[in-house]
Structures are given as structure tokens and as C-alpha cells.
Image 1: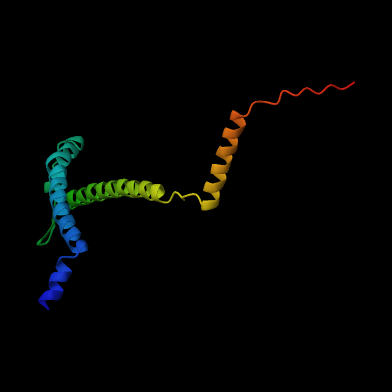
Image 2: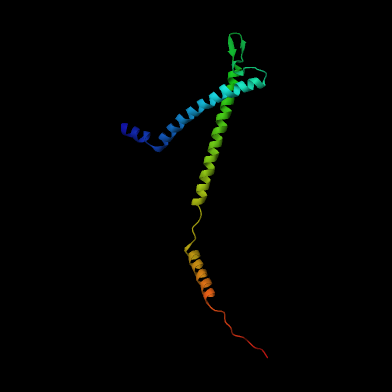
Length: 137
């Protein structure tokens, strides 16, 4: 059982996934800070000095914090757009690499015909033109 777990844990995909989760978590914290510390205060200024993060209303004993919800939605939109942008760049790079790899190599017949053509061009260049004159009476 330990051997199977070791094989599973050391697979490339598991390690890549772990690195992705760690980087994604750190990126999420950065975006959350961007939204809560920079964007939301600026949005509050635009809306007339209202701090949206602390906006809420109460229904009975329940407190509905719609400002925190708006902040979370903005977090999500920024993170999803950023991930979309990075994935798009990666896909373009992969497509370029695949196009380079997919260039078909010429067949043996095409190589042979190209060599024959080149030989014939060289022979025509080295031959002196025929200086025979034809006289018709």
C-alpha cells in the first residue's frame, strides 16, 4: 500500500497540481487584497464616499452583508479573467510549438526531384550557348 501511495504521490501530475494549488492560493490572496484595499475604496469614492464592504441590512436577527458579497464577486471576476488570460497565452504558445512540429518533411521523391532540378539548373548555367547560325535562302 505504501508503494502504491509513493508511486501516486511522485507522479508528475500530482506534483504539478500541488504547485498549481499553492500558487493559486497565493494569487487569490493578492487579488483579494487588490479588491479590498484598492478597488473597493475607489469604487466607494465614485459612489459618493460609501464603503461598500461594510454595507449590510438586517432582517430580524439575520444580517445580510451585501457589500462583502459584492467584494467577493469582484474578486471572482478578476481571478477568473486573470486565469483566462494566462491560459490563453499558454494555448497560443503551445499552438505555435505544434505548428513547428507539424511541418511535413518532404518525401523521398520530392527530395530526389529537387536534386535533379538543381543539377539541371547547374548544367544549363555551365554550358555555353550554341553559336550555330542557321541561314535560310
